[in-house]
Length: 413
Image (cartoon, one colour):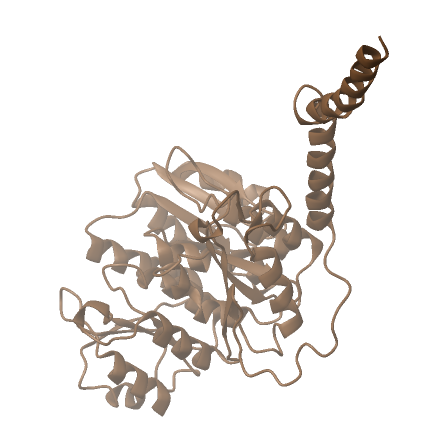
């Protein structure tokens, strides 16, 4: 009897921990797994809402590199230098297949000219934009054009000179076939660029971006630059007075069937102008209250009916970053949306990542379950020197772009 009782007692002692173990591993797992998921969810939500604050003051000491694992810096602080470095990064020009068709040579000093000119980066020109200083052509721009050795477009054009240039300056490039594009004003030049592209492509694109040419709206129009370098759609300008005659003429080429996308809030492009544009087609507005929010809104937007827009709401993308204090550098870096990782433009408020931007990047943060080597990966192109975008900001961006374990752990990675 004692033996039987003893055996039962021993079995009971071993059975209780086993049952507890089984409960925690199967039938009663819900509470444990929910707690773990909740903790990770709260952690991600916290990360999304709060920027890093515990900084290392010595992080920049003795730096030998300008890049990080998830970012490439184009270390330049003038439009000319930025455009050349962008050109050399995207067009190695080592053989015929990676030489440009034509170089888009832009007279500096007008952001409206540089922005509209980005429409020519796309095929069939397939070439960089080089921004000269107020119509003068420096030795380094001449050297870059010679290095690129453009193959020429279907009519043999190797350089498209956009804006006003000194005639003697262009003579320095007389070994290349040059086509000049000029306009009486910003709207007229945008119309001429639209016409030039349509003639080369054989048709006018149905979709257009409408942006303001007013200086106080520059940062709202700016994100268009990467899209029009990436796709056929042009930017056409409006202003505080409404729709310029030249813009109306360009819109009429779409036979009242244009897909019109206004970029910017009502303080940039008025509601009155929005209503007037409806005469020429279907109108949609993409906007954010601030330049940063506006650039994010454009990066996220996609019209499923027309295919217009980046639609970046998941991980696995290239992203260009420029400071609101140096928009001219963003214009020079537009070709990063044409080849390579096809990156939209995101703005940093005075060169710093704010909570609005950080939250968006958290939404598209890459993650993996078993194999981090399978991606997806995000990558940043930093447009500017450390005076425009600091190494600290670069480090913050590098961190939020890093691929992380989907379950919150780091085992096996």
